[in-house]
Image (cartoon, rainbow, N blue to C red; front, side, top):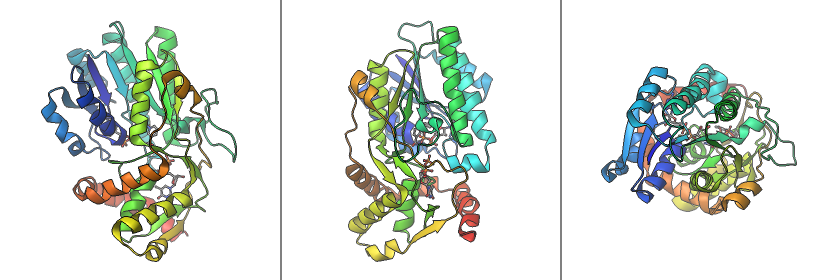
Length: 352
Ligand code: NAD
Ligand code: TYD
């Protein structure tokens, strides 16, 4: 079977390919990726020797390029992860989020409708986020029935893409499944996101910028658990249905940062008090969602999936990975990354 994994050179996509390519030697995996700033093809260099993996450098917002790619490969399964994925970036520059997340999803659906959906076992699996549901108060959980109420340009663009996928299902009978997952962490995450940013800044004794008072809550899930959940839904989920994925691991940001610096101190011998002194409260994110938390009952019951890492075990693995993979970190921190740090944190630090 031919499988497209879009966004396969990004954080979740590269972890998914690392899991699936060796496990399924009879499937041929094509990584469809534009290789934006968030991608690192070095994350996948070991797969090139396996013979059932190839990279196609394509912008999914380019309708003609996507059409040509479908005509060339005619995939049976598309696992769609390619996206602009960072909320703060979407606040400072939303346009590319519409291009990639909305128009890109539309192009992939059109190609799938024309070249793939008539095949035996055809499936378009759309990977999305719990941020489409907006913000929770101090209690309650997101279920598959929660009303969409996105807050940021990122989550609004993902909500649009979810709607397009469901509309193609209803209108054209396009076979799809959809997953909405909580915040991921783990190896190969671009250091613009909270966890890798804090690990690397702690190691390098740079400020640890916490937005607002650090009381916002996220439901953290180790990336490999997310990848196994996607595959469980592809194998055992019902066509046309949605599954929420979460780690049952709610933490306030300030507690996440304390947990991380404890591990960094333990693993590197850095003095804990010195790391605590790096914590810097900075100007809050506009429209900052207060709390995300997932009810993952449905995927547990219907697809027999449960997270296997705890927050503690997953965080330690993650810290160790960043300590052991300094070359990977250097590769992704280009001039563009340094500019982002200035754009996002320059004014925040000044305004505190
Ligand atoms: P990421 O930013 O690390 O990677 C995104 C990948 O998509 C990169 O390899 C990038 O090059 C590629 N890409 C971006 N624009 C493209 C375009 N126009 N054409 C082709 N490729 C393009 O993102 P991630 O964290 O790995 O997220 C992957 C998916 O999972 C996204 O759809 C995201 O919305 C969803 N998701 C992420 C999380 C999370 O916590 N990271 C949680 C739930 C859902
Ligand atoms: P992030 O990793 O950007 O994920 P998301 O916004 O998709 O949830 O942020 C996680 C939480 O951490 C979020 O509440 C914002 C907060 N945060 C900080 O406090 N400081 C930072 O430097 C970053 C990047 C995020």
